[in-house]
Image 1 (cartoon, rainbow, N blue to C red):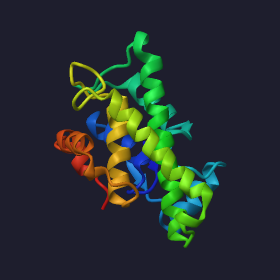
Image 2 (image 1 turned 45 degrees about the vertical axis):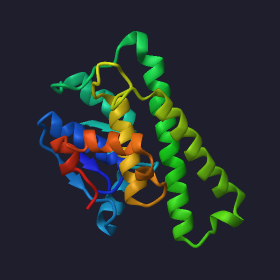
Image 3 (image 1 turned 60 degrees about the vertical axis):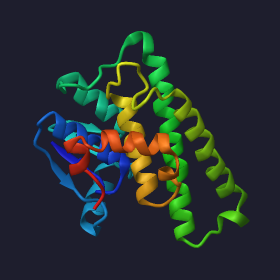
Length: 198
């Protein structure tokens, strides 16, 4: 198994976490290097990470990689997707990903010198993050989206999103006691520690 992506990408981190939880050995190609980026572009026409290979299988999307892995391997203590709750969880994950995508836009454009206060597009991205955070926290029941306090796809998505927003100082995650508690609770998981950004 070969995983292409950076060590800071939250989308790549989700796959790294799953592979480690499954006890699967894999090679990671760091796409932040010139050589890694060149290899990614020669194999993946959309140039996005994570990109995953398992022998002849080639997958370009983090959700598709997750589906592929969870169809083949099990993770003890990882909540399986319940059919009657699939739409709810899918909406959660898409909202969290939209939050993350807005955060990534903000991070890279402000890094390039674009001022948020003077740019309507960036102001909208910032407001979008706040809106999604409000929605997500309203759906949390303690440290999970489910009463049984289980950990599954949506909690993994939220953890990697919040931790990246904190790491890149894009959103004041730790100012919210609910989000801070969420991060503290799941941050004790060994493979979330091991996959933390450097």
